Amino acid sequence: MTKLNKTRQFLLFTLAGILLFGCKVDDIVVPDNGKEKDPANVWIDETMRRYYLWEDEIPAAEKLDYSAEAPAFFNAQLSLKDGKTREGSHHYYSSINKKTGATKTYMGDKDSFGFEFQYYHVNVQGSGTSFYALLTLYVLPNSPAEIAGIKRGEWIREINNKPISGNADELLATLASSKASFGIAKDLQSSVSKRVELTAATVIDDPVFLHKTFTNNQGKNIGYLVYNHFTAGLTDDDETFNDSMRKAFADFKADGVNEFILDLRYNGGGLVTSAQLLSTMLAPASALNDVFCFLKYNTKKQSYTDRRLYLDPKLYGTTGANLDLKRIFVITSRRTASASEAVINSLKYYLGDQMILVGELTEGKNVGSVTFKDDRYDWELHPIVSKLFNKDEKTDYSDGFKPTYPCEETSQVDYYTLGDEQEFMLKQVLNFIKYGTPINSGESKSLRSSDGHTLTPLYHSLDRKKTNGVVLDKQSL
Image (cartoon, rainbow, N blue to C red; front, side, top):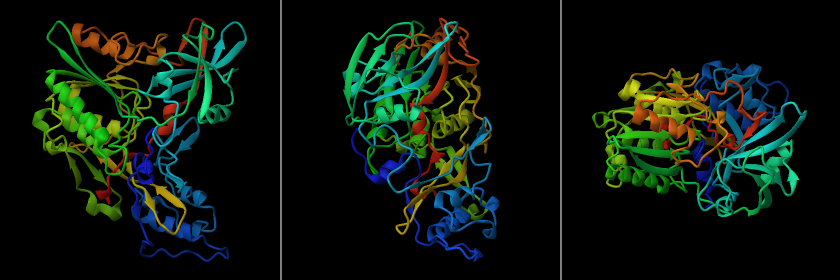
């Protein structure tokens, strides 16, 4: 993939860096407990007490250890309202990392093989045997994986002529290497049928993965967009990917699209400005120039409460187009999050129950983050600083958006290529539009299973793309 400059690397998944040089907060007195204080912790404390959304819950200074390692000090300031508690442990959306580039990356900041996957432990029921395998979810265009012929829905059973490891760290280290060989089976009941050798290369991960128009015999022209992350372009000021989106919508307009399917099942979020652009082209024409969303900050930043973003036609200019849609179908999954949810929340105000979600409960990230850095220290801070609201001042999706029609692709044995009319999720929506056919939930209440195999998911490659909230722009603070 084209190398990104350092600013863009962290801009994609936390807000564009804001340089702070010793910002001060009134009445903060660092206690003298006889231990040597880390100056970085004083900076962290000052920054968090000024901007953190839940700054009123930060412990008093005398309860904090300013000599601690910076990550421990940062984490000691976080509220349990920040993030989610699952299976007995809490995951915070706010984060801290060393200045070595972003820790939350997407396929694009380094060479890669160019495919996404779900890592499974597979138990063969009744036999007492098990194995590990990778299910390919999608393959990037012009990537080493695509050139070698790897397809969505194929199962990787061997790497470097060995069965897939049950050690996740070892597996991920191998997949991050510059070269590897893969043994591939067409399904879990088959043995390895082909072997390919891949050398990692630069791959452009355009978030506009696929766009096409389907026409049925009822006069419906159905636009279909697979959009995988909210990223404007390859560099800080680049609009390459936004331009791809604009071009896709110009094509939809030329095709006379009057129904729309937005596939966000693999989209974990990103830049709020790209979400604003997408929503502007999807919204009913009557909503143009009205509110996309507004941001609410902590009590110390209340002057920014009226920070609003609009469905502004100037955003798509002459190369994009508004489709004046009256109904939108959105394909969702557990990994549909942050900026994806901001689009859903915004357009639900204008479309009501004609904003139809098909898939799974979404993540529930209704917050925005900013990156703070200071040249004197080795750390980047990514605290949550705001909540996002739609025009109706609704932000009540912290538990996720429930699908109108629950439907899980993980219940299926055959994973057709994205955009194929037989692909399970797409087929359900196309049939609904054409025939009014009820959505086949294909619901897997526990795990995907078939033909005596029970699958336990261990790692999803898209999890590395998760943002710690909607990525705000430089003018947000």
